[in-house]
Image 1 (cartoon, rainbow, N blue to C red):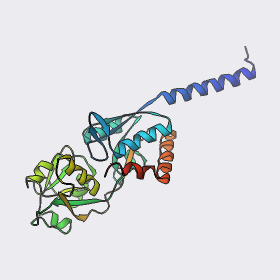
Image 2: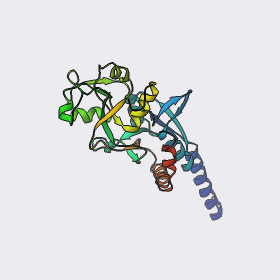
Image 3: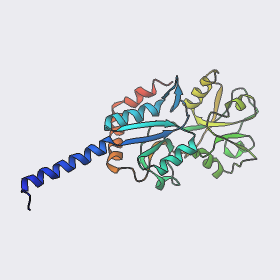
Length: 249
């Protein structure tokens, strides 16, 4: 039995609407790490500059998103195995390019090497001189591979930790000489440990470490990724990102 042409058209529209409804019902999972002020727990709530930004992107793109705080290595791995997921704040570089689909840049700032204020004996002027001191890194982090590519080695001049902020007590105790991060990050980390914001002082700029992105699974729906990027571009242009940054001095 042949169906009337108008009925076929209505059926096609119905199936399309059903597919769109299913897509909109999909929940997307994004992972992040403890990285104040970009992502951290406060009064049992996940917050931070890029947490606020990603939530806003999801709202504007009209998708349902869940954000989980995990150790960086696990967050990075989960995003590579779950199609409907992503991880932030992820530095974008050549070795990672093919691993993800990229939305960004999200909030980030230039990276520096820092010493404890007053430790004038820790005075490298460049990375070669910094190899004479003990540097803390987060395992699996982009900066770990960055410093390894510059000649830093575990057991010699580099110590690994599960998060970027874990070594701070050792930094205060002079067991770790150098930390890396943005000026905004180090201010936040010092305040988090009830120390003055300028307790860590920058020594020199780190070149070519890459801006932060929301890194999506390579099979992440392309139309949703495009919608997220489109909303991010608008947020950059209309000053909303600047307003978020101002809430995290």
